[in-house]
Image (cartoon, rainbow, N blue to C red; front, side):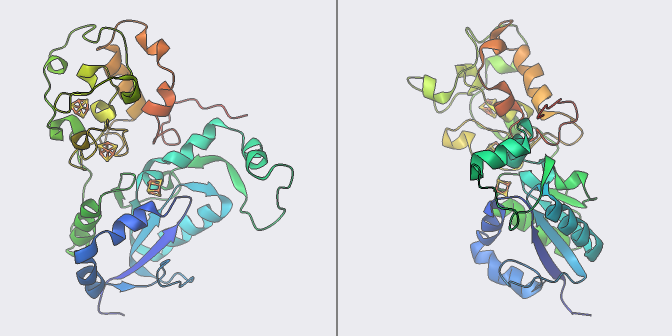
Length: 289
Ligand code: SF4
Ligand code: SF4
Ligand code: SF4
C-alpha cells in the first residue's frame, strides 16, 4: 500500500475547464502534489485505473464510454468526487437534451458521420451523480481553484466537504433595497439582458435594475465572483442542496417580482434558468425526439 493517498482523475464529457481550475491552485499545487500520489490522470497519461483513495470525475455522462468509465472509477475509488457543474448537474452538455442526437451528429459531421472513432452518443446526457453514487460534489463552471483546494484538503484531513447551503445573494455585496420587501411588480417592464441596458449601476442588485441574475436560485460558494465583477450570475453553482429544481425556483421568485405575464416575453427562459441543470432537473420535461 502506498504511504500517501492516491488520486485518479477521469474525464467524461466536459471541456477540461475544471481541471484547468485545479491547476490554478498554483502556489498550493506543489504542496498538494507532495501530499498525494497521482495515478490515472490526463497529466500522467496513465490509462489503467487502480484502486485509489480519491477519484475525481469531470464532465457529464453523454456516451456509452462515459458510463463505463464512471462505473469503473466508482468501483476503484474509496471517495468519488464530482468536479464541476457538468458532473454534478449535467451542465452545459445537458443542453443537448433539447435536440435529437442524430440531428446533432448531422450538424457536426454533415453527411459524413464516421462509422468508428466516435463514441456512441446516449439519447440523453445525464449528470454523473445520476449514474453512480458520488461522495462529494464540487459544483461550479468551473469551480474556483480555492473551492477545489478547500474540498481536496478537507478530504486529505479526513473530513467530508459539504456544499454551501445558503443562497448566493447573501454573499453578494450589491445593494439590495426593493428585493428584500415582498411586493408585486417592482420591475416596471420585465427582465432584460445586460446588453439591452445603456448603463448599469455597479453597486445595485442586477434584478433591481431589471437584469436577470440567477443569484436568487443559486447556491453560494464562489464569493459571488461574477456579480462582484459586474456580471450577472448564470447559476453555475446549481441549486442550494435540497432544492429539486433551480429553474423552477428562479421562475417562482421572478414571478413574485415582475408584472404578470412579463416572463412570456423573455426569450430564453429555459437557457437561462435551467442552463446548468437541464439534464438533472426531474421536474423539467425535455422533448428531443
Ligand atoms: S463544469 Fe464547466 S468548466 Fe467544468 S467541464 Fe463542465 S463546462 Fe467545462
Ligand atoms: S439577485 Fe444577483 S445581483 Fe441581486 S443580490 Fe442576488 S446575486 Fe446579487
Ligand atoms: S456568480 Fe454565479 S455564475 Fe458566477 S461563479 Fe458564482 S455561481 Fe457561477
